[in-house]
Image (tube, rainbow, N blue to C red):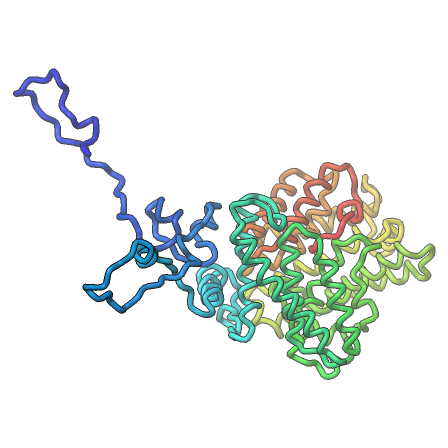
Length: 496
């Protein structure tokens, strides 16, 4: 049809100059005969992913396929020409059931495709190459769930909040698929536990880790219960000694969980700590952490052990009326931080951590010291500061505040200078959380804005989990609460 603007006026004479019609600038593509109905209606190319195409998921559109679950039935035998057709038979022959059949393992293939197109580009580089999972068809459910988690996180990020299970009718197909595969994961975990008989299958920890990841992405709060169940399963198998002596590589998912739990406990109230590894010795923990380089938490082992000691002391103080030798214990914590071998750790893990590993190690060291200053009792830290970090006689601040402000400035300066150049920015999530918790009533707005922007950007990363968003929410509330304390900031468990 000719555009209205190009039609001649009815009163124009026969000799009037005719202006050529203006060409339509937007070119419509032909209607696609494949793909979801939403993309076909919009005349855009559909990736045809299942259960919802990536374009619809990204734009929060309802993705629906035509006759996805129907079957095409046709007959290759022709009817004899002289054979009469009764009306009922004619209706049966004319009716067809159409199908768009999915091959076996379709969801698994789509999960691999999604991984390489969306997840892989964001993965850290180690030893000169990006990390690649060892895809195994026998563990297809594990990989499908991992990709579903990334897709779910993406949908949460597009809404600026964490989703609850079953929310948004437009995601009904996704929730159905998600529930189906998550049920398979729970079933596998239960079978592994039932069949353990004292010698558990290491694959059980992979699926347990999947459950933990799922509850951290959803606004469910079940991640803490799943972690405690995982430690209970280890105890059933004979405790940590059965796994670390000798160090069994098949239990890597559990070692990765310990790496996470060390940091999670810092942002959990002292009275609600994850106690599964409380009785593990420093030697057992060091054996695990030395052999488990976590790109998300590249913290030197010596520093990580000190963080564990701070967490245990927080719990002891919160659950006891008297802690003997508190001053000596706190002095030992700061001494161990001063003795931490960051350069030696960086040299061993240079291939895994990249060229900025020394900088990252130093940032974690300074963050751990600031965390100890904020999380331990103020009178005891003040007493240590008088003896080991005194202020000039003319200083106009308390010795504790002087120590806190100096360490806060040191950490923030390191973060601001190096955040743009660190090869894998997600590795700085915990130091950023610590810096944010130090910006109480006397924190500068420009520093709060820096921490807020960094954490929000990390959460928006394809690999950013819900823990980042929960920590950011806690920090935003804390900054304007008028309170200073670490326990005031993290008054509810969040995975830091």
